[in-house]
Length: 363
Image (cartoon, rainbow, N blue to C red; front, side, top):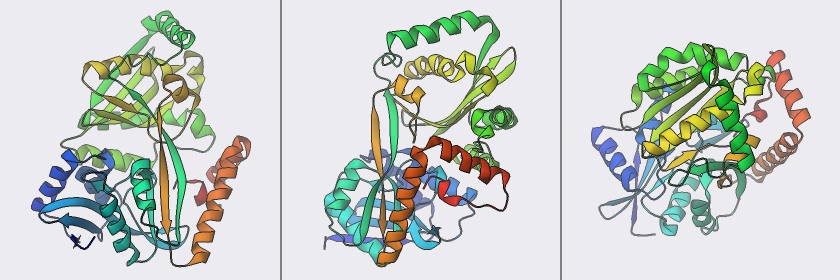
């Protein structure tokens, strides 16, 4: 690790962005969330003024670019990646799978105090584990289902499910209209998708998808993205919008970011019909993967058996802080496993303005 040089960037310029894009294009773990465009979007969305970007180099070759901001995790100050609850994958960008660089990154991060690395993929977690740093917790954070599009994108549905979706679509085909728009045109449909969300079952349970922060993020994504694209699909029934899917197109990967449907139209299985129409189009356009993003659901399990596990990495010199984080993690897992209790708490959070149940947010 002595040969690895560490540089701290506190102000980015065009030359550094060019280096970042160059590394991102060839990186083994590239995703939209470790791209320069995601970082720039976060700076706008969260009004980030101060940040530090750790750059690890070996000779003239950049090995790692890792952006960080100061934040609080359950009231404790930490260094973490930008994106908050919107971050679906790790923001740590590595040239290749490299145990030495991963260990060096952790060694440097320790010097800044407590840190929190969200949504780290399994390969990188294995390299971090080998650093054998004491006072570090590595806990499973999410399941990330995905569909390989190089095969038949609907081929993982059971024959029964595929037949049900197809028959339902054919039955109501004359009443349905499928719309798809991209980039800044998406902004013209913010009110439409917000209206869909207001009448969704998620909204009635206290879980709002299209809130002010989400709208601000969508606007900034549309303004910032150059090499990646926003992609919005909406399904209409008799000219009434009933379901939407907002995704990000990045390097032949489609990341499904936000979705919601009007609960009164659940008889149509609108989410399944939308995917039934969208997935073959994405395959035809040359996309390799449809990424459902974090979280499990019956729909996702029906469409694909494939998934990846993500992990959160916590570090603090203070054992009491680590114990607090672990206790909240375990309590949250217990609550999420009891859907009736979780739904009740979500309603309380929505209806009682004085009640703050921030631990229910996905961290």
